[in-house]
Length: 134
Image 1 (cartoon, rainbow, N blue to C red):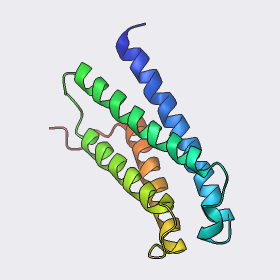
Image 2 (cartoon, rainbow, N blue to C red):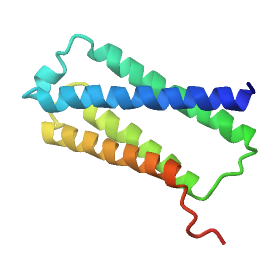
Image 3 (tube, helix red, strand yellow):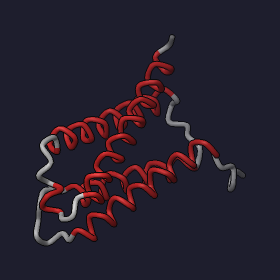
């Protein structure tokens, strides 16, 4: 197996683990009645560390894959990269340490936005739109 295939496998595993992490944190955020109890979950720090590690793995493997393709990408790649930034920023908003300035509804809105961005990225990868290819 060549380096490109191995990196694609690692990238795919990272996406799967990110999906599981977002599912788990969504359950915590929507099932527990207040944001104070949502942060009292015993393994919260481990979940957040896992999610940060996965973001790093996705960023590094994506960058190396981009380098191996000589930075020749389809036009929808830029939308995918922007949506990845949306996932990171909305996850930060949703799962930040307890702060009285961040309401529970804002946290839930952040996770919903992360889900929309995640689904949009998956749709872009599956569909690979050819619109605007001149």
